[in-house]
Image 1 (tube, rainbow, N blue to C red):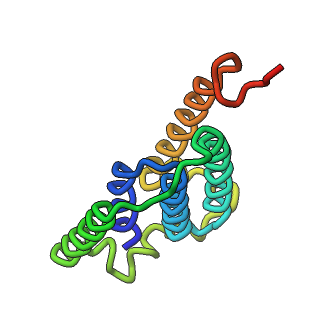
Image 2: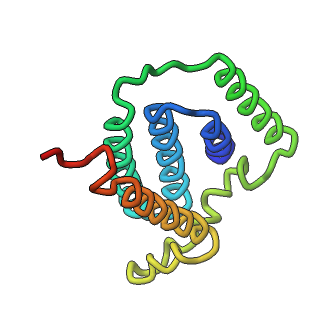
Length: 165
């Protein structure tokens, strides 16, 4: 269920134009990704750290964007709301028709946390194994691109966050 909502948020991100709505969608997607990481692992520390890092990076991006578009009005278009509702209903119908056992079986949560009996020194190795490797690598790439974009945009001579002397 988290995956369907996460995919819906990803598809809806394309239609957004205001920095506040983009930030809210990214915050929701980060929260869902952290919840998925928490469910897949036996330790919640990784999801906490992931959430804190993503929220702090989005806070920096949000501060920069509000300095650019500070007086822009926030209006949700009716077309966007209809598109989001259709995407959500389509993805839920798709999941209902396929009835994927990985998403709906009660044993699916315990299938990812079969490493519970290992010692704590091997806890980090499962974050770099198959199910979690994709999530970790996507978060690293996202944070790197956000850092590069922020550095390129905030050129001290031409950017909106420049010192006026």
